[in-house]
Length: 182
Image 1 (spheres, rainbow, N blue to C red):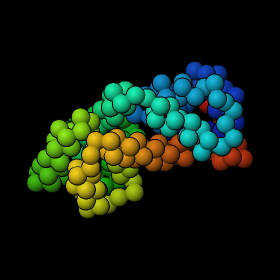
Image 2 (image 1 turned 30 degrees about the vertical axis):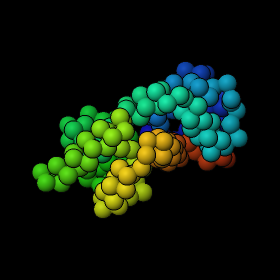
Image 3 (image 1 turned 180 degrees about the vertical axis):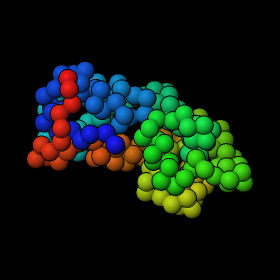
Image 4 (image 1 turned 90 degrees about the horizontal axis):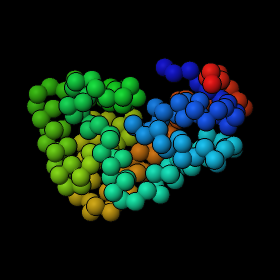
C-alpha cells in the first residue's frame, strides 16, 4: 500500500510532486491532476476530487471516450495477463476476476465484447461496491442504455473508483499523512 499523504502537502508541494502523488488515482491519465493545479489549495479531499472529476467531465465526447478506452475490461485479457495498473489489479482482485474458470471467463469476454461493440469503450464499474453476481447484473442492465446515458454513467463509475483511491491515499483533513519527497 502506498503511504498516505496529507492534503496540506498536496496543497503546498511542487507541481511535479502533486501530479506524481495523484498519478495512480486516474487510470493512465496524469493530465487530470495537472488540470487542477491552479485551483489549489483545496479545502478537503472531496473538493480536490470534485475538481478532478470536473476536468474529465469538461472534455468533449471524443476525448472522454478516448479516456474511457484507456481503462481495462473487467475480467478481461489484461486481468488474466496481469498487465493492469496496480490499483486495477487490486480492485479486480477483490472479486478474483483474474482467476475465473474457462466458462466464467467466456461469459465476461462475451459481455465485454458486446459492450465495447455497442459503446466504443470498455465497461467500467466501481467493482469494490459489487459482488460478481451484482457486477454481471449491472453489465447486462447497462448494455440496454443508450450512448448518452452510458457516457454519463461511466463517468459516475470512474468518479466512484477514483474517490475510493483518493481516500486510500490522502490523510484526513487534520493533516494526517506523510509528505512525499518533492
